[in-house]
Image (cartoon, rainbow, N blue to C red; front, side, top):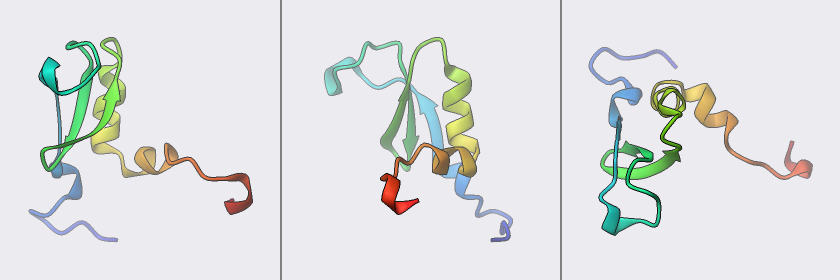
Length: 71
């Protein structure tokens, strides 16, 4: 799929912290948001994984778990 200038799907992802009242995670965990919706959480020391999740579509696909018979 070619990337159309100005319509990069990775631009929909942002990295930040969720307010403590909205989740059960400690407030220093990194949260990846897609169009404002939290989709992935990373430990405080692993911001690199949050950035990789936000920028690498292949990495996002690799995290999807499938059943053995679906492979």
